[in-house]
Length: 455
Image 1 (tube, rainbow, N blue to C red):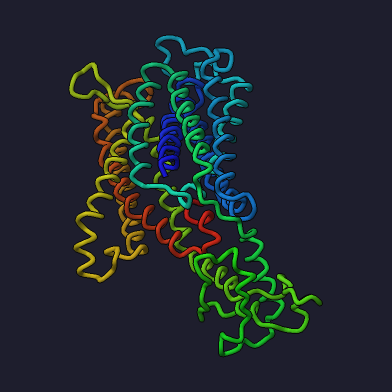
Image 2 (image 1 turned 120 degrees about the horizontal axis):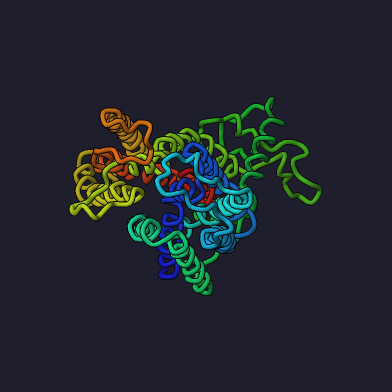
C-alpha cells in the first residue's frame, strides 16, 4: 500500500503542477492568442477524458491494471520530458516580447516546430492519462492524498513557474512523475494482481446481438429458466454473480436457450447465448448512463478555471498583505482545493452522523442525492463568476483599461475566491458522489472503465 500511496501522491503532484498553469506558458512563452491557447488545452483535456475508456478496456480485457498503469505513466513521462526540454531550449520557443509591448499580436508567434513539440507533448500526456486514470481508483487511490497533492502543486510548482522559470517549473513535476513511476514499479512483487476477464465491450455487444436475434422469442416468466454458467463467468464474477432483474427485459432473450446455441462439443456460442450475469452487466451499464453523463456538466462548468479564469486573474490586483508580494494567478485554484478538503472533512465528520440518524442511510444521503446537491451548487459557481466578471469589466471601463490587456485593473483578485470555493464544494459533493455511485454499481469486470471515464 505505501508504494501505491507514494505513486498516487507524486502522480497527482506532477500532473496538476504540469497542467494547472499551462495556459500561462502558452500565452506568455509561446505567445498564442488566449482563444487559441484555451481551445488547445480544452481539446486535449477532452481527449484525455476519452482515452481512459480505451485504457480501462485494455486493463480489463488483457493487460491488467499494473501494466496499464505502468505503460500510461511512461508515456505521460515522455510528454512531460519533451515539453520541459522545449522550455529549456531557446530554439524551440519564440523570442521574448519587446519591453512595453502590450498587444500579443506584436510578439513573435511560436514556430511550427514549437507547436509540433507542444501538440506531441500534450498528445502523450492525454494517452498516458488513459492508462493511469481508469486503474488508479481500482488499484487503491485515496481522495485526501489527491487533494493534498493538488494543494502542493498549485502553490509550490506554480510559484516556481512564475518566479524562477519554466525550465524549473516544468522540470519539478517531471521529476515527481519519475518518482511516481519508480515507486509504483518497486512494489510489483507485493501487489495482488487479478487476471483480466476479457473485453467487457465485446461481452456487451454479444448480449445485444443475441437478444436481437431472439427478439421474437417469448421471455419466460420464471428467470430460473434463463441460462446460467458459473464456470464461464468465474473470471468476471470473483465477488459473486449478478442476480436477475426485471427491468430492460428485452435483453433477457440473450439468456434463453434455443436450438443452435451450443457447439457440437457443448460450448455455448457467445454471439447466440449469454449468461444471466452478462445480461445483467449490460443492464447495469444502461441504467448508469444518465448518471455518468451528468459528470459532463460539471466538467463543462469547471473548464474555464484552468484557462480564462487564470488570465482574468492576471489582469487584476494580485497583491497580498505587502505590496511587493503577489499571488500567482493559477494559485487561485487553492481556494477550490481548500474548500473541497474542508467540505469532505465537514461532510464525513459532521453531516454524515446527523443525516444518518434522519435518513437511516449508512452514508447519510445516497450517492445520487449527493451528486444532485453538487450539480446544483456548481450552477451557483457559474452565476458568481459571471457577476465577478461583469464587475471587473465595469471597473476596467471606468479606468480606460478595456483596450490595454497589459494593464492592471484596480480590483482585488480575491473577488474570484468565492467562485473557486463554491466549485470546490460542488466537487466534494458531485464528483465524489458520482464516482462512488459508479464504482459501487458498476459490474465487477468494468470498475476500471466507468468511474474515471469523465473528470
